[in-house]
Structure formats: C-alpha cells, structure tokens
Length: 452
Image (cartoon, rainbow, N blue to C red; front, side, top):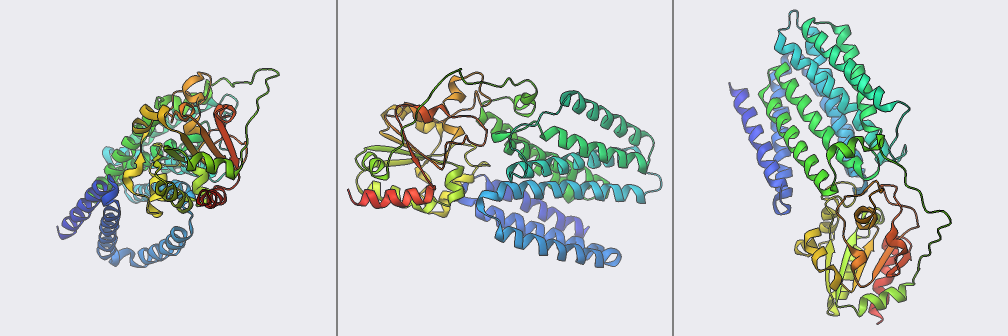
C-alpha cells in the first residue's frame, strides 16, 4: 500500500511537470519536478525489489548513469533531437524486453496479460527501430531525404499484416517463439515506417514514435501490475500524440501525407535551360540596410544553431535598437529540428521572450518591414511552400519574408535546407545573400553597424 502511494506522488509529479513544461516561465521548474518524481520512482522500485534483484538493479543504475550523464553534458544543442530519438528508442526497447521476460516467466498467462504483452513487444519494437532510423537521418549518417524502396508500399503493408497475424496468434496461443517473430516483424516495420519520411518531417516522426513508446510503457505497466508505469506511459502517449498533431498543423499538411507522401510524390524538375542569378552582398552593404531601417525582423534557423550564433544575434539586435530600429524575432513552430529549439537557444542569449513572435504576429504586417534578416533558416521562408503545389513542402505555413521591402539571407552556401528543396527566395531581386558562418557574419555586421 505504501509503495502504491509513493507511486501516486511520483505520478502527480509527472503531471505537474507536463503542466510546467507548457510555458517557458515554468519550464525549468517543471523539468526539475519531473526529474524528482522519477528519482522517487526509481528509489522506490529499488527498495521494493532489492531482495530479489538488488544487484541487477544497481548494475543497471550504474550503467545508465555512466552513459546518460556524459551524453547529456557533451551533446550540442543542435544534436538534442538526435538524443531525444535515441532515448525514446531505448525506452521502447526496454518496455518490449521487460514484457518479453515477464511473458516467459508466467506459466499460464491470461488473455489480457497476453494482449498487453503483445502490444508492448510490437509497439516497443516499432518505436526502437524507427527511432534508430530517425537518429541516423538527423545525424546525417544516412540520407535525410525520403527513402522509397522498390515495392516499398506493398512491403510495408505486408509486414504490417504479418505483425497483426502474429499478434493475434500469440494472444490466442502463448508462444515464446511466435513472440520473437513478432518482435522481429515490429523491428522491420519500424524501419519501413520511417524510411519514406524525409527532411523537415523527421521531427514529426520522432514525436509520433515518442507517443508509441508511451503506449508501450503503459501496456508494460499492465504486464508488471505497476500503476505508475500505466500513468507515466499514458501521459507520454497522450502528450506525444498532441505534439504530433500540433507539428503536423504547423507544417500545414495532414499527418498521413507527411508519413506516406513519399510513395505518391512526383519529383519536380527545373525548367529546361532556366538560368537564375543571385545577388551577393558585402557586410558593409547589409550593415547600411540594417542600420538605417525602421523595422527589422530576424528569422533564425538551424544555421544559427549550428554556428552557436545566438549571442552574436542578440548583440546585433541590441545595437540596432540603440539606433532606434524596431526589431523582433520570427520563430516558426518547427524552426531548427524540434519545437522550441529556437526558443531555448535565444533564451540562452537572454533574448526577451516578448521579442519572439509567431507567424500570425509577423505575416500580417510583413509588407511594412524594411529588412527581413534570415539567419540560417531555409524551409520556413521558402515561397515554394506557399506558391508551388509540386513542392514537397507545399502547404507548410511560412514567414512571407519575400513580401518585405528587402531580404538579407545569411547562408553558408547555396545548398538547400533540411527538406532538400531549392528555395526560390534566393533568386528574388529583393534578396541580398551574405555567405559565411552565421556567427562570423553577425560579428562582422555588428562591427560594421557600430561604424555607421
């Protein structure tokens, strides 16, 4: 009874943590509260199971700490989505392995126990293999573009059908061998499920797989008769589902199109003989544009994150404001690689939260903006998402910076963004390109503005 009450307290910590994470003001406190709840849960599980598995629990904790702390401390902010994908996959695998072990230890499992085990093993396996593929894509250890295998759609449907048949078979006739086959089918389906997802859609797949892991953990809670796992898994599943839905809305496309659109996509080709030119500028040219503007919007992206240029951006903005220029930041819901990525980076540089504006705040008045300064962003300002039905990102809401009076586009090179789509904004007569590392370019801009 005492153990269940402690688990209830931990569950309340998780619920309040999610509430805190819903707003920047209480996000840190929510994170700490969630960590405290998890610490209470782990200690309780250790004390409760020390008589039977004490040594194994200690070994598991030591290994987890030895891997987790160095990884968390050394990971760059730009690599956080990859780490989230890996941790999520490990959670799914852990739930599947625990359920499998419990299944083998029960002589005559009842029907509900078998169903819960089947769900945990299948969903956990899908989450693990799918998360590994998303990690490989984000880490650029494989192409981030959609990978469509020959007969890939038929293969995916076939593996899904085999998984369902095996799941029903194990639910009716308990069999460790069939459960192993089910896990293998789940692993295969996870890979096939994520391979066709590419570019800017990968974070949405991570969010969906996170929801899958939550469902797997909740089902494993039934297998282990652990109320806390049921509550925690349900929270993760629900929050992951809501986040997936919100991200899909931010992309302006149905979830089915994001996940399976590669099977029906038609490659767009440039017009034959088409020649397009770009206008490259100097730091001094851009400094004059910014220094004598009245209204500037800064649109940061993944390039700013990679260069760790948030502090340089804040210093430049402060200098412009000192000259009487009105400056705001345009933050797209999927800027960077995950929701909130830009918010966290700019918060590190002490950028006031009220300067961070969303699409609905920027776009209505974009025609009165003197300069739109795009720092390392690409897909979120690509007019093709608005004007080109053949574009893979068509329908995604963007910042309409091409409608500002002038655009300064800071890029390392002419390479396309994460979605792998060429950006027509680069060739707009209003656009001035400033090539180079974002941090270096912003630092030089700051010095040039000071000289005006």
